[in-house]
Amino acid sequence: MLKKVLKKLELKTDQENFIKLREEAFNLGRHYVKDKGRVFDFLLCTEEIYSNSYMHAYESNGTIEISFFIEGNFIGVSIKDLGVGISDEYIYEELKIKDETAESGRGLFIVKSLSDKMNINKNKDRGTEVIFYFERI
Image (cartoon, rainbow, N blue to C red; front, top):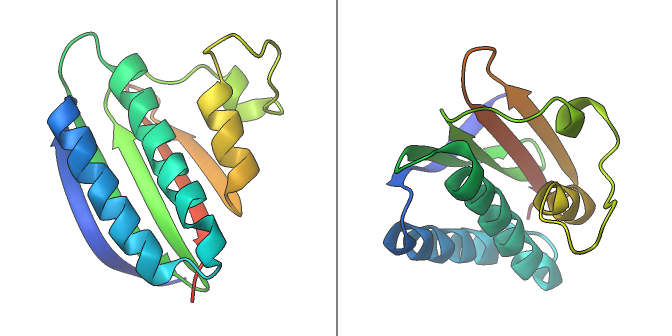
């Protein structure tokens, strides 16, 4: 299926760029997410995956690639880092919250629960890409 890229960003892992990403996600969500009641879900999913990359991928500052795109009946978001990589348990096992107070896996669980679909791609050397989709107008 053909992808139409709406916006591509390469952001350093800092608070200023988190705010920039938030604004972009909100604006694109307002225009493309079909159910306007789910725009904040779209925003939350974007924030959660960016935060995972920000907090877990790098020991110090790194760069995160974000792409907003249209694919079929969906608006998609790809968030990719070149950090330490994600544990296989989050890719191959059913995502569940084992402990509500634990940080581990909670963001992915939220995104999987709120989005229409989600894929996790692990680079065999380094890095992780999380792609999630919401039905679009």
